Amino acid sequence: MNLTTLPPLFLDLSGAFAVLVSLSFLFAKARAYWHWSNASLLPYFLLFIGGGQWMLAGLQVTYLLFGIHGLYLWHLEARRDAGELRFNEPLWYGVTWVASLAIFAFTVIVTDFSQAWNWVQFAAVTLALVANFGTTRKWAWSWPVWVTVNAVQAVYFWHTAYWALFALQFVLAAMSVYGFLVWRKDERRVVEFA
Image (cartoon, rainbow, N blue to C red):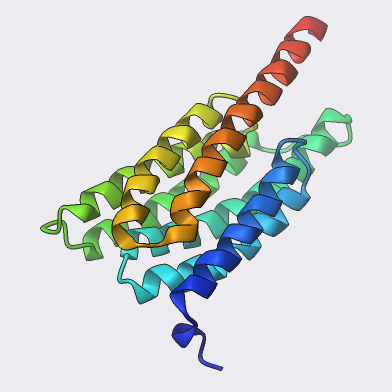
């Protein structure tokens, strides 16, 4: 079976399913989040490649880097917090950003910005990179940024007729509000015990 000939609706729905499952783990900051999130990337990558949406396809590759990096980073942070090890945090926090920004630069170069909708794609991808950085660090401020990403992407996915992705943006925005409340509560608890 040629993966590039899968129906766009199938790719759209299978990616949306994996994202929803992943977020149920993210609220609890469970590592299974990264596995399910990474599982959503192949269908979305194929969907965006098939639609010629290079920035969104490149974002999937960036998400994979963040996914692998985030999973291992959470492991290192748990061991650090347990007093088992120390690691070079600036290096670990910066390494994925360098690769992600290189992918972002490449997708900017190959994107035709004479098409107005590609500017919407650019805004969504830029905001998603910022939000993803905050998520890998488990910072609560990342959730409101995700809500903004969802709003921009809802407009874009309406335009492209990716209906599962369009509907998913509203579910994700609601889940992001909940995630923000949970993570803010966690942050306050950490401050109280400090």
